[in-house]
Image 1 (tube, one colour):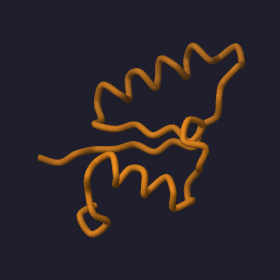
Image 2 (cartoon, one colour):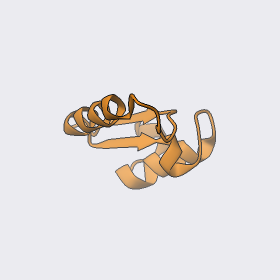
Image 3 (cartoon, helix red, strand yellow):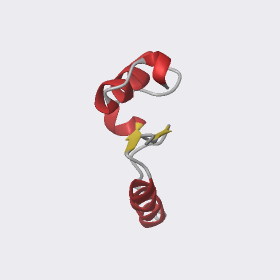
Image 4 (cartoon, one colour):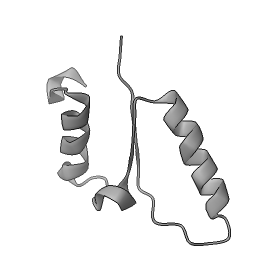
Length: 65
């Protein structure tokens, strides 16, 4: 089958709405093999580092995605 991944350019949410953000991220993780949050990786789209990280974790080659 296919492996799935989500990239999100998000930030550490210390606002009053952080529970909503945390809930959303939890829901996403249930449906995808990998969820990459830019705030945790300290790289954002379109930085190549975020894509390289995903390829490494998914053990995939660029031509396969």
